[in-house]
Image (tube, rainbow, N blue to C red; front, side, top):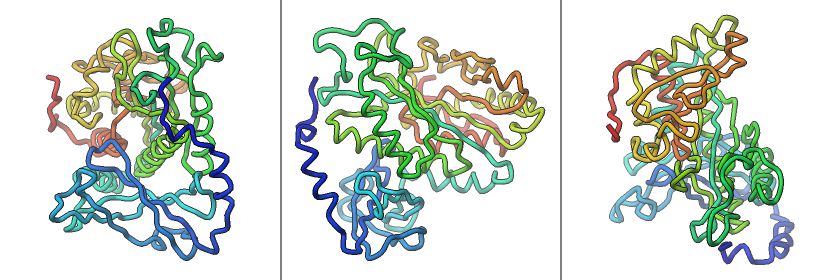
Length: 373
């Protein structure tokens, strides 16, 4: 298996330097979404004392011409801190800080979807929208081949890998466990994890989170995962269909509820939300991957536990539907719905904003057309 050269370095050597005193100083790592809308960047500065609230962390800047966010002749972009986490890599008192990106004129960068999401969540705050996102991902060697797969061939058919146990079924559990612990340390609201259907594919869940917090915590969980994979010398991909053929793709299923849905008799509110979603299928498909549906068209085929990208469907306990009502929710007659359409590489700000626009703010119409139609 082809792994990164850096993973072969002696990590015990690094430990002795991590133990050195910082003489009262604090390392603060700024994390932001780059111009692709899918990938993350970071850089670190020294502060004189530990910041505990956002206003104690200064704005910063970076070269947007090197991240696909600006021209070289006017390249400075602003980093605006929006969420603080503990740093699981350099440990306390150091911090990770998620940032929004503003352009030179202080307007949001094109990849800054948090800005409009926050405005929508503020409008809907009285409904108390809760989210839980199920982030699927696949592990690759640096040669692009799935981690743990045979060099000259394929593993056995899908079946024994989902939630599996054993060296012939599970590849990369140590990465998953490291990520889980690191998220707990950082303060990310990680709710669980499991091996997925395709070998070397995993899932972790983040939530429940209310409003804008969902996107913040999922993006930081992604950053932590990429950093951990650096140490192990493997690559994590959020491609929604990393391997063509008879293999499951990767999604980011969105569990969603309002206060009305969670209360006794809330099933009626869930069914009303599904009816609204049925009338805006193209809009949601457009919002659910960075390429407006093109990435998801490789995954949403109607096979491998997906619905067709062209059709809207809903059902109780149906993993082949656009919207699944969990069986327990059907029995309790309250709870939440699961939108199974978002791709693994979706922007969680776009997904949660779309759900609230349609289900809470009652927006109508298919303003955005699906690229696959």
